[in-house]
Length: 342
Image (cartoon, rainbow, N blue to C red; front, side, top):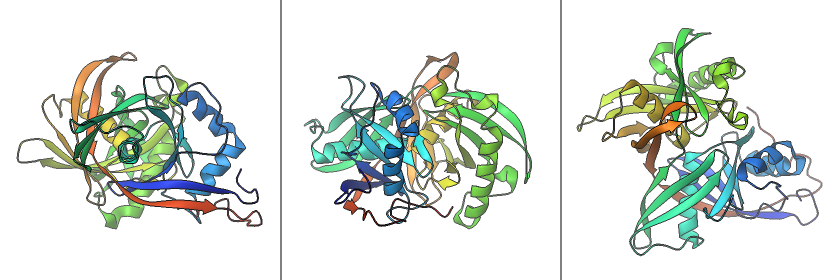
């Protein structure tokens, strides 16, 4: 338990498109529940689990934009393992960039045996459901990872909202988590580093203005309710093959910024673009981030889900190992269990 004499815990860290992901294969705390969704509910209410999240996520071992996950058993034998995703403010329902990192870790560590065909399937149970990843390799080198998400759909279109930067309209869509989508140009911004602070400000404002409204409710599972974040996007036209090209920044939790193009956010974006006809089967969404990293995404299939016209999004990216850590906590350290300044 954090704070006990001699306490230490090990992690393996990755980044996906610049966004960190800290993997805790043995969390050392009891996380009760028979499914990952139930374990998330338990973790949100349990002080010991939350204390470990804060210790690993916040300063002085992490920072306000840190992300990670606790490995758990899967819901059943159909998946290789489960995961509880966490960030500076709590436990999220989905994380595409984290799933990509976990697939790279699972294959690279030997937890999932590498398929000699060069494509290895990794199945993970997450709070929003079961996701599948295909890890493509050339020998020992991972060349790309496809993240196949849960059914994703637009929940609402052109929702009017008054903000400090004027009246705007947003779309709201589910991609394992619920996001509000706002054209950055509508608030006089571009998705570029020089507008970083302003993007965070309006992203937080939109999220909290909508979070307690009916637009933030998941249609069948209230555990998935709440506006997880705001996706501020910039339309960059089309690429040379006629595919839609956009840049985005996802501001999630309370002002946390995704450095990657955001995996579940990209899925939510695919759902919105499919609903408007801006992305069709056979096309690829070229999706860039604030730091210049890129995911590509496509509609893998179309279906009905939870009473909505939905798509199964497939997002392609990759992840890289950045290090291993053994963290300790001196029981006399009053600041050691974590703090944030944002």
